[in-house]
Amino acid sequence: MSEQAQEIGTLSRRRLIKSSVVGVAGIAGLGLARHVAARYGLLPPDSSGVWGIGETLTYASQRVLMSHRSMAREFSRSECSRIVPVSGPPPKTDDFLRLARNDFDEYRLCVSGLVSRPLSLSLADLRRLPSRSQITHQQCEEGWSFIAEWSGVPLSTVLNLAGVSKSARYVAFFSFDSSYDSLDLPDAYHPQTLLALGLNGQELPAEHGAPVRLRVARQLGYKSIKYISRIAVVDSMKGIGRGRGSVSPDHGYAWYAGI
Ligand SMILES: Nc1nc2c(c(=O)[nH]1)N[C@H]1C(S)=C(S)[C@@H](COP(=O)(O)O)O[C@H]1N2
Ligand SMILES: [Mo]
Image 1 (tube, rainbow, N blue to C red):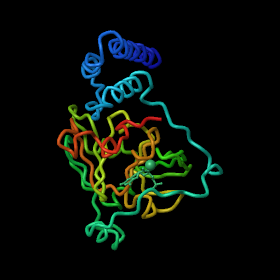
Image 2 (cartoon, rainbow, N blue to C red; image 1 turned 135 degrees about the vertical axis):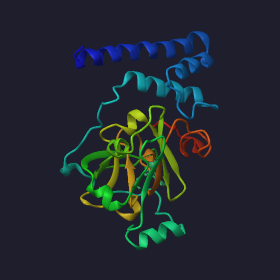
Image 3 (cartoon, rainbow, N blue to C red; image 1 turned 120 degrees about the vertical axis):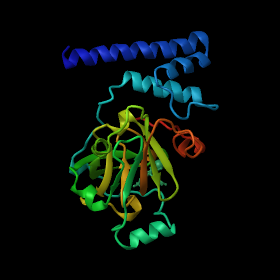
Protein backbone atom coordinates (compact mmCIF):
# COMPACT_ATOMS: atom_id res chain seq x y z
CA MET A 1 0.00 0.00 0.00
CA SER A 2 1.31 3.51 -0.80
CA GLU A 3 2.03 5.84 2.12
CA GLN A 4 -0.91 8.02 1.08
CA ALA A 5 -3.31 5.08 0.94
CA GLN A 6 -2.04 3.97 4.36
CA GLU A 7 -2.65 7.47 5.74
CA ILE A 8 -6.19 7.47 4.32
CA GLY A 9 -6.73 3.98 5.75
CA THR A 10 -5.51 5.14 9.16
CA LEU A 11 -7.70 8.25 8.98
CA SER A 12 -10.88 6.35 8.17
CA ARG A 13 -10.13 3.85 10.91
CA ARG A 14 -9.61 6.75 13.32
CA ARG A 15 -12.92 8.30 12.18
CA LEU A 16 -14.64 5.00 12.84
CA ILE A 17 -13.20 4.78 16.35
CA LYS A 18 -14.08 8.41 17.02
CA SER A 19 -17.66 7.96 15.85
CA SER A 20 -17.97 4.92 18.08
CA VAL A 21 -16.56 6.81 21.11
CA VAL A 22 -18.80 9.86 20.52
CA GLY A 23 -21.81 7.83 19.30
CA VAL A 24 -21.66 5.52 22.26
CA ALA A 25 -21.46 8.58 24.53
CA GLY A 26 -24.75 9.83 23.01
CA ILE A 27 -26.68 6.57 22.87
CA ALA A 28 -25.55 4.51 25.79
CA GLY A 29 -24.09 6.96 28.25
CA LEU A 30 -20.74 8.33 29.19
CA GLY A 31 -19.58 5.30 31.19
CA LEU A 32 -19.62 3.15 28.07
CA ALA A 33 -17.84 5.85 26.01
CA ARG A 34 -15.08 5.73 28.59
CA HIS A 35 -14.99 1.98 28.13
CA VAL A 36 -14.60 2.29 24.33
CA ALA A 37 -11.89 4.97 24.74
CA ALA A 38 -10.04 2.66 27.17
CA ARG A 39 -10.33 -0.23 24.70
CA TYR A 40 -8.46 1.83 22.08
CA GLY A 41 -5.87 3.26 24.49
CA LEU A 42 -7.48 6.73 24.30
CA LEU A 43 -7.97 7.43 28.00
CA PRO A 44 -5.93 10.43 29.18
CA PRO A 45 -4.36 10.24 32.68
CA ASP A 46 -6.94 12.77 33.96
CA SER A 47 -9.92 10.70 32.76
CA SER A 48 -11.36 10.22 36.26
CA GLY A 49 -13.22 12.82 38.31
CA VAL A 50 -15.88 15.40 37.44
CA TRP A 51 -14.34 16.65 34.20
CA GLY A 52 -12.88 13.27 33.24
CA ILE A 53 -15.38 12.32 30.57
CA GLY A 54 -15.02 15.74 28.88
CA GLU A 55 -11.23 15.39 28.90
CA THR A 56 -11.58 11.86 27.51
CA LEU A 57 -13.85 12.93 24.63
CA THR A 58 -11.55 15.86 23.77
CA TYR A 59 -8.42 13.77 23.86
CA ALA A 60 -9.92 10.76 22.06
CA SER A 61 -11.35 12.91 19.24
CA GLN A 62 -8.09 14.87 18.81
CA ARG A 63 -6.03 11.70 18.67
CA VAL A 64 -8.44 9.96 16.29
CA LEU A 65 -9.10 12.86 13.91
CA MET A 66 -5.80 14.76 13.77
CA SER A 67 -2.75 13.41 12.04
CA HIS A 68 -0.10 12.73 14.66
CA ARG A 69 2.38 14.33 12.30
CA SER A 70 0.62 17.64 11.59
CA MET A 71 2.94 20.53 12.32
CA ALA A 72 2.47 23.71 14.33
CA ARG A 73 2.95 26.85 12.23
CA GLU A 74 6.52 28.14 12.02
CA PHE A 75 7.28 31.84 11.58
CA SER A 76 10.09 33.95 10.16
CA ARG A 77 12.69 35.78 12.32
CA SER A 78 11.03 39.13 11.55
CA GLU A 79 7.86 37.89 13.26
CA CYS A 80 9.57 37.15 16.60
CA SER A 81 8.08 39.06 19.54
CA ARG A 82 10.18 41.89 20.95
CA ILE A 83 9.15 41.05 24.48
CA VAL A 84 9.34 37.48 25.74
CA PRO A 85 7.27 37.23 28.94
CA VAL A 86 8.19 34.89 31.77
CA SER A 87 5.96 32.61 33.81
CA GLY A 88 7.45 31.60 37.15
CA PRO A 89 10.96 32.42 38.44
CA PRO A 90 13.78 29.84 38.52
CA PRO A 91 13.69 27.36 41.42
CA LYS A 92 15.37 28.32 44.68
CA THR A 93 16.14 24.84 46.00
CA ASP A 94 19.69 24.17 47.21
CA ASP A 95 20.44 21.48 44.64
CA PHE A 96 19.29 23.71 41.77
CA LEU A 97 21.23 26.75 43.01
CA ARG A 98 24.36 24.62 43.44
CA LEU A 99 24.14 23.36 39.84
CA ALA A 100 23.37 26.85 38.47
CA ARG A 101 26.39 28.34 40.27
CA ASN A 102 28.74 26.15 38.19
CA ASP A 103 26.97 26.78 34.87
CA PHE A 104 25.29 23.38 35.20
CA ASP A 105 28.64 21.58 34.65
CA GLU A 106 27.51 18.84 37.02
CA TYR A 107 23.99 18.66 35.66
CA ARG A 108 22.99 15.29 34.22
CA LEU A 109 19.73 14.65 32.45
CA CYS A 110 18.76 11.12 33.45
CA VAL A 111 16.37 9.20 31.24
CA SER A 112 15.09 6.11 33.00
CA GLY A 113 12.08 3.82 33.27
CA LEU A 114 10.87 1.66 30.37
CA VAL A 115 14.02 2.01 28.27
CA SER A 116 16.66 -0.51 27.28
CA ARG A 117 19.57 1.95 27.75
CA PRO A 118 19.08 4.39 30.67
CA LEU A 119 20.91 7.65 29.92
CA SER A 120 22.76 10.24 31.95
CA LEU A 121 23.54 13.18 29.66
CA SER A 122 25.59 16.26 30.50
CA LEU A 123 24.78 19.59 28.83
CA ALA A 124 27.86 19.03 26.62
CA ASP A 125 26.44 15.63 25.59
CA LEU A 126 23.11 17.24 24.74
CA ARG A 127 24.81 20.01 22.75
CA ARG A 128 26.67 17.41 20.68
CA LEU A 129 23.43 15.77 19.52
CA PRO A 130 21.85 16.93 16.24
CA SER A 131 19.84 20.06 16.96
CA ARG A 132 16.82 21.73 15.46
CA SER A 133 15.66 25.36 15.57
CA GLN A 134 12.11 26.50 15.09
CA ILE A 135 10.18 29.74 15.43
CA THR A 136 6.83 28.99 17.02
CA HIS A 137 4.04 30.65 18.95
CA GLN A 138 3.90 29.86 22.66
CA GLN A 139 0.51 30.51 24.15
CA CYS A 140 -0.14 30.69 27.87
CA GLU A 141 -3.53 29.50 29.09
CA GLU A 142 -3.83 32.86 30.87
CA GLY A 143 -4.06 34.78 27.61
CA TRP A 144 -0.57 36.06 26.76
CA SER A 145 1.64 34.65 24.06
CA PHE A 146 4.82 35.25 22.12
CA ILE A 147 6.68 34.09 19.03
CA ALA A 148 10.28 33.03 19.57
CA GLU A 149 13.01 30.86 18.14
CA TRP A 150 13.76 27.74 20.16
CA SER A 151 16.68 25.45 19.52
CA GLY A 152 17.60 22.14 21.02
CA VAL A 153 17.52 18.40 20.61
CA PRO A 154 14.35 16.73 19.35
CA LEU A 155 13.01 14.65 22.23
CA SER A 156 12.65 11.75 19.75
CA THR A 157 16.46 11.68 19.32
CA VAL A 158 16.98 11.18 23.05
CA LEU A 159 14.16 8.62 23.27
CA ASN A 160 15.68 6.65 20.39
CA LEU A 161 19.09 6.72 22.10
CA ALA A 162 17.47 5.29 25.23
CA GLY A 163 15.45 2.66 23.35
CA VAL A 164 11.84 2.99 24.48
CA SER A 165 10.13 -0.30 25.37
CA LYS A 166 6.97 -1.47 23.60
CA SER A 167 4.96 -1.23 26.82
CA ALA A 168 5.68 2.52 27.23
CA ARG A 169 2.73 4.95 27.08
CA TYR A 170 3.94 8.27 28.48
CA VAL A 171 7.10 10.28 28.87
CA ALA A 172 7.14 12.04 32.25
CA PHE A 173 9.20 15.17 32.96
CA PHE A 174 10.18 16.33 36.42
CA SER A 175 11.23 19.87 37.21
CA PHE A 176 13.56 21.32 39.85
CA ASP A 177 10.60 23.43 41.01
CA SER A 178 8.71 20.19 41.88
CA SER A 179 6.32 20.55 38.98
CA TYR A 180 5.91 17.56 36.67
CA ASP A 181 4.13 16.83 33.43
CA SER A 182 3.89 14.15 30.78
CA LEU A 183 3.27 13.60 27.07
CA ASP A 184 1.77 10.67 25.23
CA LEU A 185 4.02 9.02 22.64
CA PRO A 186 2.60 10.84 19.55
CA ASP A 187 3.55 14.21 21.09
CA ALA A 188 6.80 12.89 22.59
CA TYR A 189 7.94 11.75 19.12
CA HIS A 190 6.50 14.76 17.26
CA PRO A 191 9.29 16.40 15.21
CA GLN A 192 8.66 19.82 16.81
CA THR A 193 8.87 18.55 20.41
CA LEU A 194 12.25 19.76 21.63
CA LEU A 195 14.44 19.54 24.66
CA ALA A 196 15.25 23.23 24.29
CA LEU A 197 18.73 24.52 25.14
CA GLY A 198 18.49 27.91 23.46
CA LEU A 199 16.11 30.83 22.95
CA ASN A 200 16.42 33.46 20.19
CA GLY A 201 19.98 32.44 19.35
CA GLN A 202 21.21 32.63 22.98
CA GLU A 203 21.76 29.99 25.62
CA LEU A 204 18.46 29.32 27.38
CA PRO A 205 18.06 32.19 29.89
CA ALA A 206 17.64 31.21 33.56
CA GLU A 207 14.03 32.36 33.80
CA HIS A 208 13.02 30.57 30.59
CA GLY A 209 13.96 27.15 31.94
CA ALA A 210 17.75 26.60 32.04
CA PRO A 211 19.44 24.22 31.84
CA VAL A 212 16.88 22.30 29.74
CA ARG A 213 13.19 22.84 29.08
CA LEU A 214 10.58 21.16 26.99
CA ARG A 215 8.97 22.90 24.01
CA VAL A 216 5.74 21.29 22.90
CA ALA A 217 4.63 23.31 19.88
CA ARG A 218 1.19 21.74 19.58
CA GLN A 219 0.02 22.31 23.15
CA LEU A 220 -0.55 25.34 25.40
CA GLY A 221 2.44 26.90 27.17
CA TYR A 222 1.98 25.08 30.45
CA LYS A 223 2.99 21.78 28.82
CA SER A 224 6.41 23.28 27.98
CA ILE A 225 7.86 22.44 31.36
CA LYS A 226 10.97 24.36 32.43
CA TYR A 227 14.02 23.46 34.59
CA ILE A 228 13.87 19.73 33.77
CA SER A 229 15.59 17.57 36.36
CA ARG A 230 14.88 14.11 34.92
CA ILE A 231 12.79 12.13 32.46
CA ALA A 232 11.04 8.79 33.02
CA VAL A 233 9.38 6.61 30.40
CA VAL A 234 6.34 4.92 31.97
CA ASP A 235 3.29 2.83 31.10
CA SER A 236 1.02 4.65 33.54
CA MET A 237 1.03 7.90 35.52
CA LYS A 238 -0.42 6.11 38.56
CA GLY A 239 1.83 6.63 41.57
CA ILE A 240 3.38 9.80 40.09
CA GLY A 241 2.15 12.87 41.98
CA ARG A 242 -1.63 12.61 42.15
CA GLY A 243 -1.63 10.20 39.24
CA ARG A 244 -3.24 12.55 36.71
CA GLY A 245 -0.22 13.02 34.48
CA SER A 246 0.62 16.57 35.51
CA VAL A 247 0.08 19.23 38.16
CA SER A 248 -2.32 21.03 35.74
CA PRO A 249 -5.43 18.89 36.47
CA ASP A 250 -4.94 19.72 40.17
CA HIS A 251 -5.37 23.40 39.20
CA GLY A 252 -8.35 22.92 36.91
CA TYR A 253 -6.48 22.59 33.61
CA ALA A 254 -6.55 19.63 31.27
CA TRP A 255 -3.64 17.21 31.01
CA TYR A 256 -4.01 17.37 27.22
CA ALA A 257 -3.78 20.99 26.07
CA GLY A 258 -3.69 20.54 22.30
CA ILE A 259 -4.01 23.63 20.08
N1 LIG B 1 8.79 24.13 35.82
C1 LIG B 1 7.90 25.00 35.34
N2 LIG B 1 7.64 24.98 34.02
C2 LIG B 1 6.75 25.84 33.49
C3 LIG B 1 6.05 26.76 34.32
C4 LIG B 1 6.36 26.76 35.71
O1 LIG B 1 5.82 27.55 36.50
N3 LIG B 1 7.29 25.87 36.17
N4 LIG B 1 5.10 27.60 33.76
C5 LIG B 1 4.49 27.12 32.51
C6 LIG B 1 3.63 28.08 31.87
S1 LIG B 1 2.10 28.29 32.57
C7 LIG B 1 3.96 28.70 30.69
S2 LIG B 1 2.86 29.66 29.86
C8 LIG B 1 5.32 28.57 30.13
C9 LIG B 1 5.93 29.95 29.97
O2 LIG B 1 7.24 29.87 29.50
P1 LIG B 1 8.19 31.12 29.68
O3 LIG B 1 8.25 31.48 31.15
O4 LIG B 1 9.50 30.71 29.12
O5 LIG B 1 7.57 32.25 28.89
O6 LIG B 1 6.16 27.77 30.93
C10 LIG B 1 5.55 26.65 31.51
N5 LIG B 1 6.54 25.83 32.16
MO1 LIG C 1 0.95 29.48 31.15
